[in-house]
Length: 240
Image (cartoon, rainbow, N blue to C red; front, side, top):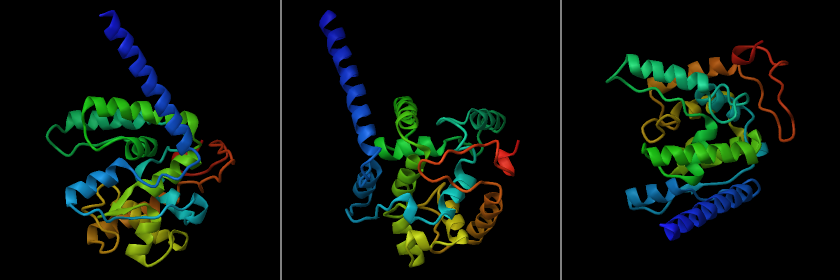
Protein backbone atom coordinates (compact mmCIF):
# COMPACT_ATOMS: atom_id res chain seq x y z
CA UNK A 1 0.00 0.00 0.00
CA UNK A 2 2.84 2.34 0.90
CA UNK A 3 4.62 1.54 -2.39
CA UNK A 4 1.44 2.07 -4.39
CA UNK A 5 0.93 5.49 -2.78
CA UNK A 6 4.53 6.43 -3.53
CA UNK A 7 4.16 5.39 -7.19
CA UNK A 8 0.90 7.33 -7.45
CA UNK A 9 2.51 10.43 -5.94
CA UNK A 10 5.41 10.25 -8.39
CA UNK A 11 3.01 9.68 -11.31
CA UNK A 12 0.93 12.71 -10.37
CA UNK A 13 4.05 14.82 -9.89
CA UNK A 14 5.43 13.75 -13.26
CA UNK A 15 2.11 14.47 -14.96
CA UNK A 16 1.86 17.97 -13.47
CA UNK A 17 5.49 18.84 -14.23
CA UNK A 18 5.33 17.56 -17.82
CA UNK A 19 2.03 19.28 -18.61
CA UNK A 20 3.29 22.59 -17.23
CA UNK A 21 6.46 22.24 -19.30
CA UNK A 22 4.53 21.52 -22.51
CA UNK A 23 2.10 24.38 -21.83
CA UNK A 24 4.99 26.82 -21.31
CA UNK A 25 6.61 25.53 -24.51
CA UNK A 26 3.41 26.06 -26.49
CA UNK A 27 3.31 29.63 -25.21
CA UNK A 28 6.13 30.33 -27.68
CA UNK A 29 6.24 27.43 -30.18
CA UNK A 30 3.64 26.98 -32.97
CA UNK A 31 1.27 24.03 -32.51
CA UNK A 32 1.67 22.20 -35.80
CA UNK A 33 -0.20 19.02 -34.83
CA UNK A 34 -3.05 18.19 -32.46
CA UNK A 35 -4.52 14.86 -31.29
CA UNK A 36 -7.71 15.56 -33.28
CA UNK A 37 -5.76 15.77 -36.53
CA UNK A 38 -4.39 12.26 -36.04
CA UNK A 39 -7.76 10.92 -34.86
CA UNK A 40 -9.47 12.25 -37.99
CA UNK A 41 -6.73 10.72 -40.16
CA UNK A 42 -7.36 7.31 -38.59
CA UNK A 43 -11.14 7.72 -38.94
CA UNK A 44 -10.95 8.61 -42.62
CA UNK A 45 -8.02 6.38 -43.53
CA UNK A 46 -6.26 9.35 -45.12
CA UNK A 47 -3.20 11.01 -43.65
CA UNK A 48 -3.55 14.14 -45.77
CA UNK A 49 -4.81 17.30 -44.11
CA UNK A 50 -4.47 21.05 -44.62
CA UNK A 51 -2.94 23.14 -41.85
CA UNK A 52 -0.82 26.30 -42.02
CA UNK A 53 0.34 28.04 -38.86
CA UNK A 54 0.17 31.83 -39.13
CA UNK A 55 0.59 34.42 -36.35
CA UNK A 56 -2.46 36.33 -35.17
CA UNK A 57 -1.04 39.49 -36.75
CA UNK A 58 -1.28 37.79 -40.18
CA UNK A 59 -5.00 37.09 -39.80
CA UNK A 60 -7.90 39.37 -40.64
CA UNK A 61 -8.73 41.49 -37.55
CA UNK A 62 -12.36 40.46 -38.10
CA UNK A 63 -11.61 36.78 -37.39
CA UNK A 64 -11.19 36.94 -33.59
CA UNK A 65 -14.20 39.24 -33.36
CA UNK A 66 -16.31 36.82 -35.41
CA UNK A 67 -15.48 33.78 -33.25
CA UNK A 68 -16.10 35.75 -30.07
CA UNK A 69 -19.49 36.86 -31.42
CA UNK A 70 -20.33 33.28 -32.36
CA UNK A 71 -18.66 31.16 -29.68
CA UNK A 72 -17.73 33.17 -26.59
CA UNK A 73 -18.77 36.79 -26.25
CA UNK A 74 -17.20 37.13 -22.80
CA UNK A 75 -13.82 35.70 -23.81
CA UNK A 76 -11.90 38.85 -22.85
CA UNK A 77 -13.65 39.06 -19.49
CA UNK A 78 -13.63 35.54 -18.03
CA UNK A 79 -10.71 33.44 -16.80
CA UNK A 80 -11.43 30.33 -18.82
CA UNK A 81 -14.95 29.52 -17.64
CA UNK A 82 -18.12 31.52 -18.26
CA UNK A 83 -20.18 30.65 -15.19
CA UNK A 84 -23.18 32.71 -16.32
CA UNK A 85 -23.29 30.76 -19.61
CA UNK A 86 -22.86 27.45 -17.74
CA UNK A 87 -25.82 28.27 -15.49
CA UNK A 88 -27.95 29.35 -18.46
CA UNK A 89 -27.13 26.16 -20.39
CA UNK A 90 -27.85 23.99 -17.35
CA UNK A 91 -31.28 25.61 -16.84
CA UNK A 92 -32.11 25.14 -20.54
CA UNK A 93 -31.05 21.49 -20.57
CA UNK A 94 -33.11 20.73 -17.45
CA UNK A 95 -36.20 22.40 -18.90
CA UNK A 96 -35.81 20.76 -22.30
CA UNK A 97 -34.89 17.19 -21.50
CA UNK A 98 -34.66 15.10 -24.62
CA UNK A 99 -34.18 18.19 -26.80
CA UNK A 100 -31.03 19.69 -28.26
CA UNK A 101 -28.48 20.23 -25.50
CA UNK A 102 -26.91 23.66 -25.06
CA UNK A 103 -23.22 23.87 -24.21
CA UNK A 104 -21.21 26.62 -22.54
CA UNK A 105 -17.70 25.78 -23.65
CA UNK A 106 -15.48 28.85 -23.89
CA UNK A 107 -12.78 29.51 -26.48
CA UNK A 108 -10.23 28.74 -23.77
CA UNK A 109 -11.83 25.35 -23.08
CA UNK A 110 -12.03 24.54 -26.78
CA UNK A 111 -8.36 25.46 -27.19
CA UNK A 112 -7.33 23.25 -24.28
CA UNK A 113 -9.36 20.36 -25.72
CA UNK A 114 -8.02 20.83 -29.26
CA UNK A 115 -4.35 21.04 -28.28
CA UNK A 116 -4.04 18.56 -25.42
CA UNK A 117 -7.01 16.17 -25.48
CA UNK A 118 -9.33 14.04 -27.57
CA UNK A 119 -13.06 14.37 -28.45
CA UNK A 120 -15.46 12.82 -25.98
CA UNK A 121 -17.78 13.42 -23.07
CA UNK A 122 -16.32 11.28 -20.27
CA UNK A 123 -15.80 12.74 -16.81
CA UNK A 124 -12.07 12.01 -17.06
CA UNK A 125 -11.71 14.01 -20.27
CA UNK A 126 -13.85 16.82 -18.87
CA UNK A 127 -11.72 16.95 -15.74
CA UNK A 128 -8.55 17.16 -17.82
CA UNK A 129 -10.15 19.90 -19.92
CA UNK A 130 -10.74 21.95 -16.77
CA UNK A 131 -7.12 21.38 -15.71
CA UNK A 132 -5.61 22.39 -19.07
CA UNK A 133 -7.97 25.36 -19.41
CA UNK A 134 -6.75 26.67 -16.04
CA UNK A 135 -3.14 26.11 -17.16
CA UNK A 136 -3.39 28.04 -20.40
CA UNK A 137 -5.32 30.87 -18.76
CA UNK A 138 -2.53 31.10 -16.16
CA UNK A 139 0.46 30.72 -18.51
CA UNK A 140 -0.76 32.20 -21.81
CA UNK A 141 -2.12 35.61 -22.75
CA UNK A 142 -5.59 35.97 -24.22
CA UNK A 143 -3.90 36.81 -27.51
CA UNK A 144 -1.95 33.54 -27.46
CA UNK A 145 -5.07 31.53 -26.62
CA UNK A 146 -6.89 33.11 -29.55
CA UNK A 147 -3.90 32.58 -31.86
CA UNK A 148 -3.65 28.88 -31.02
CA UNK A 149 -7.42 28.47 -31.22
CA UNK A 150 -7.65 30.00 -34.70
CA UNK A 151 -4.71 27.91 -35.90
CA UNK A 152 -5.80 24.55 -34.49
CA UNK A 153 -9.59 24.43 -34.68
CA UNK A 154 -11.25 22.15 -37.23
CA UNK A 155 -12.79 24.27 -40.01
CA UNK A 156 -13.86 21.62 -42.50
CA UNK A 157 -13.05 18.10 -43.62
CA UNK A 158 -9.25 17.72 -43.19
CA UNK A 159 -8.95 21.52 -42.79
CA UNK A 160 -7.47 23.00 -39.61
CA UNK A 161 -6.92 26.64 -38.86
CA UNK A 162 -8.07 29.85 -40.48
CA UNK A 163 -5.30 30.14 -43.08
CA UNK A 164 -5.93 26.67 -44.52
CA UNK A 165 -9.67 27.40 -44.50
CA UNK A 166 -9.14 30.74 -46.26
CA UNK A 167 -7.01 29.14 -48.96
CA UNK A 168 -9.20 26.08 -49.58
CA UNK A 169 -12.63 27.69 -49.25
CA UNK A 170 -12.10 31.31 -50.31
CA UNK A 171 -8.91 31.31 -52.42
CA UNK A 172 -7.40 33.90 -50.07
CA UNK A 173 -4.90 34.18 -47.25
CA UNK A 174 -6.09 34.57 -43.66
CA UNK A 175 -5.15 38.25 -43.79
CA UNK A 176 -7.36 38.86 -46.84
CA UNK A 177 -10.60 37.52 -45.34
CA UNK A 178 -13.41 40.06 -45.26
CA UNK A 179 -15.75 40.68 -42.35
CA UNK A 180 -18.44 38.60 -44.10
CA UNK A 181 -15.97 35.76 -44.77
CA UNK A 182 -14.99 35.63 -41.10
CA UNK A 183 -18.61 35.57 -40.00
CA UNK A 184 -19.32 32.70 -42.38
CA UNK A 185 -16.34 30.69 -41.09
CA UNK A 186 -17.48 31.31 -37.50
CA UNK A 187 -20.96 30.09 -38.42
CA UNK A 188 -19.55 26.64 -39.27
CA UNK A 189 -17.71 26.08 -35.99
CA UNK A 190 -20.43 24.25 -34.05
CA UNK A 191 -20.09 21.45 -36.62
CA UNK A 192 -17.48 22.16 -39.33
CA UNK A 193 -17.80 18.66 -40.82
CA UNK A 194 -21.51 19.25 -41.44
CA UNK A 195 -21.57 22.96 -42.27
CA UNK A 196 -19.43 24.34 -45.10
CA UNK A 197 -18.10 27.86 -45.57
CA UNK A 198 -17.23 26.94 -49.18
CA UNK A 199 -20.76 25.81 -50.11
CA UNK A 200 -22.97 27.57 -47.53
CA UNK A 201 -26.62 26.61 -47.21
CA UNK A 202 -29.45 29.07 -46.63
CA UNK A 203 -29.19 28.28 -42.92
CA UNK A 204 -25.48 29.14 -42.96
CA UNK A 205 -26.18 32.45 -44.67
CA UNK A 206 -28.74 33.24 -41.99
CA UNK A 207 -26.22 32.42 -39.24
CA UNK A 208 -23.63 34.53 -41.05
CA UNK A 209 -25.97 37.51 -40.91
CA UNK A 210 -26.69 36.96 -37.22
CA UNK A 211 -23.00 36.77 -36.41
CA UNK A 212 -22.26 39.93 -38.40
CA UNK A 213 -24.92 41.69 -36.36
CA UNK A 214 -23.42 40.43 -33.08
CA UNK A 215 -19.96 41.55 -34.20
CA UNK A 216 -21.13 45.16 -33.96
CA UNK A 217 -21.19 44.76 -30.18
CA UNK A 218 -17.80 43.09 -29.81
CA UNK A 219 -14.75 45.37 -29.38
CA UNK A 220 -11.70 45.10 -31.62
CA UNK A 221 -9.42 42.35 -30.39
CA UNK A 222 -6.41 43.79 -28.48
CA UNK A 223 -2.89 43.25 -29.78
CA UNK A 224 -0.27 41.31 -27.81
CA UNK A 225 0.80 43.34 -24.80
CA UNK A 226 -2.23 45.65 -25.05
CA UNK A 227 -4.52 45.46 -22.04
CA UNK A 228 -8.26 45.38 -22.47
CA UNK A 229 -10.29 47.57 -20.16
CA UNK A 230 -13.98 46.58 -20.19
CA UNK A 231 -14.89 49.88 -18.52
CA UNK A 232 -13.84 51.84 -21.63
CA UNK A 233 -15.64 49.59 -24.11
CA UNK A 234 -19.06 50.44 -25.44
CA UNK A 235 -21.91 48.33 -26.69
CA UNK A 236 -23.07 44.74 -26.28
CA UNK A 237 -21.99 42.47 -23.46
CA UNK A 238 -19.15 44.85 -22.50
CA UNK A 239 -21.32 47.90 -21.83
CA UNK A 240 -21.29 49.34 -18.31
